[in-house]
Amino acid sequence: MKNPLSLRGMANVSYWADDVIAARNWYNEVFGIEPYFHMPNADTPAYIEYRVGDYKNEVGIISRKFQPELAQPGPGGAVLYWHVDDLQATLDRLIALGATPYQPVTDHSGGKNTFVTASVVDPFGNVLGVMFNQHYLDIFDQVKP
Image (cartoon, rainbow, N blue to C red; front, side, top):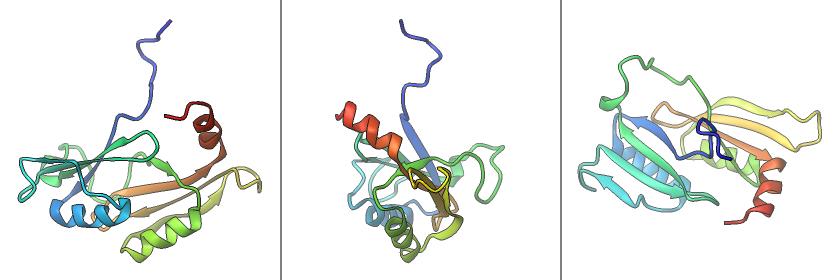
């Protein structure tokens, strides 16, 4: 029986940027791929989209001119954490690419290192969370795409 209100998985996460081309260049480096979609086109994009990770989740970069009216300036709000196999190496790489620390490495598992988070602010003002999450790996082993 399907619950019509159940959340079934991340469909898209959107990050805002004043300069979508600069954001595209930065995220190309972070993800190691180019976006598969540009709107209206690759030369003057207002929106771009990547498919990344084990489940090819959608990551959109949107021109800040389309940001909702009530959005506050600066980082804030919910943080989406991406599972990574090596949290410290990923964090170091993001900072080397120009991100700034937001949340330090924090072990939420009582020293077991099974649920560890950190986050940065990308050069465009968005919070990008990374985590090592043993639960993610356990579920992935059960339902590999």
